[in-house]
Image 1 (tube, rainbow, N blue to C red):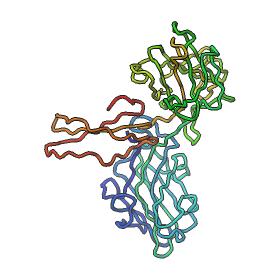
Image 2: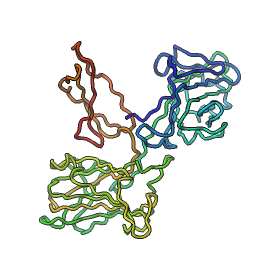
Image 3: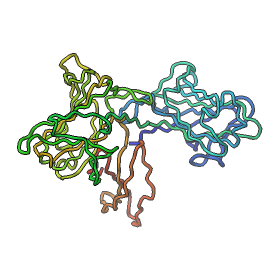
Length: 417
């Protein structure tokens, strides 16, 4: 699912109606497609786009709320940056009508992000920055008005605008890297921070991973490690702005040598700043969540858990995701040191459409009859919210009525879907 909402692309769309002062369509300069909107002329110049179908900039298609850190993106080009008025270089208005909008104004070219001439620049504006008072009351769930106003453009010079959309930003908070942190293991001789000198896969970020094993090689027992940061960790706000919701995910890398020797593992967050876990969030990772559902040895995967899926333990008044005082990782196993489990790269990640390592393949269909699947593609590591596929296979069979694309990876590394 691509977390992007198109506002306009300047093509011959019945959804876009353009108006304003001293603007026209240009078929020689375009960021994508065949045309852009061009501004020129002395005095204030404007381009106003009215959308026939309003765009919801309040909630994504999967129900996740649009964060204030998500970004409005558009593209600009000028043939001579020195001929654009240095006063109020650009004013952007976004609204649910021409009388209900908020605005953002750039006073200089450098603040806007234009640093040269005769090239396209991508301008990204966090939603939180489109906040200056305009008029009326904006309804973010029904945006149908986008306006660009610039000061005088001197002589025969132009400012082009093209391709505007709203895009979800990828937000990550590093909770624990297992590098340079103090983890206290109980029993003290049943765990350690280790490197991965032969590249087996248990270290996925940095230099170290946490290794835990059983107290007894014959009896299932619990071994755990606790990390207490110097101050409480706030897992409700992103460093780049915006709030983290309970749809966002706690993720970590998990590697198991012999799943038959592991009953389950647990992840705990003390949530009242006391580091005692009397008030905590807890999640148990059972064997069906292990790599290959516990059917293979010496394999790893990324575990992803929504914050809302954690159980809450309340014994002393309760806590919150904003006051994480300690983290505990627990393994119940019976394999001894030769059959350990490993943990690395504990993060909070914004829920997005796709992230991680992905592979693709396709099939062709004649009606309901499917061809054999193509060879899988090379992998692609995705850290944004969209994937563009190119060089897709085509069929020479004239009877083919459709093509279907399948992928595996991310949170489901073993399943094509």
